[in-house]
Length: 438
View 1 (cartoon, one colour):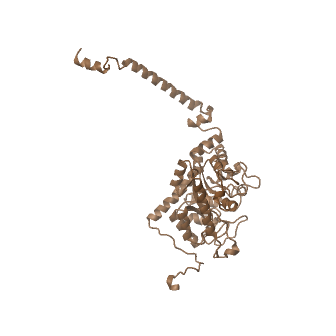
View 2 (tube, rainbow, N blue to C red):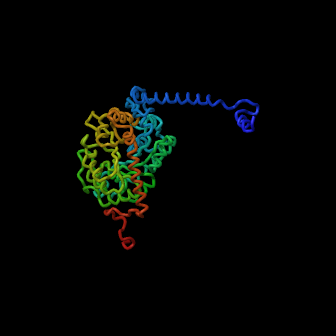
View 3 (cartoon, rainbow, N blue to C red):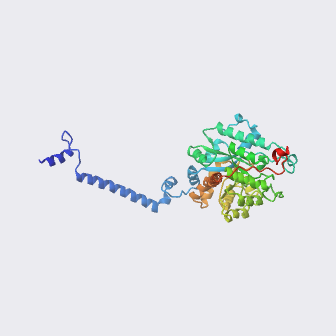
């Protein structure tokens, strides 16, 4: 045996002379068998996907990239990946009027009155929502024609912010305070419900833009320009049959308020506003706007719903916006006709979705509480909406608009935009000329 032959032979045997490398023909046969089996399996999967996909159970159909035949199965699958982000839930006002804001008396793990508790939020696949820190409009006689008399609206709003944050803190395994889109995504990724704060009416600002800044510091990320009353900033649409305009839309102070909301990154909410206020705000705001809980006036004609004239402005002006559908039966359909299908009609007309719970006394049939959100998604799926469209509607559209507002805020600050110091021109308590007037 030559030295080269001995070296090659030693590579195939261990120190005891036992053969350690199989024959090359054996390796070839094994590889051929493995590749043959893999080819057969691949061919079988392709045949099933091409010719028998519709016959598979929904669980396998989704795995294979097909569309489930059962709308509810499809809805739950979509919501597992893209949970609901609700624009407006009135849990804080329930805490105020039923429990005197005593958080120790509130058990969100039990069956709460009205439509919201932790079990139903989880069942409804809710990934986030705005806690509405609403307080009612003041008595018009008490505040006066020019909104100058103190009515405790700011104090009461601070109490509602407080009770909301205390409830969020009480259930840290369920809720996570969110101050922006990054926080929303983080909360959802950790299996928590992102909790944001929204002020439902600029009557809660005490005619002061400085109050807006302090609300922002406390976590507020949207302000509705009006509730059902006019205020120093803008006109409201009121309640049916509507409300006579006072300012014909936005006041100069209202324009300044939007400037500061844009600078801070606070979403401009146009629910409850008059049509003139909505159109002017759409044109003026540098950032995308929202309607936190409004339906389509063409589908059901009440003043609180958004008319096509305003919806068309969004496209005509090249703006971005999201309209979050209100579930209160009065805004959905005539008496006794509000149900899942009727709500879906509004969604299809507007092209976007969200809603309002715990601020309504009645509910649509089939959408009795927050656990029923999947029923609406299933209804839209059965009407031909794709999983991508529905994923956008459940939360993606709101995130896009919110990110747009955050971007505008960042750019304004980078460009040197200063805080807005404008005062309500009817105020007499602060001298305009400074020390010279003292």
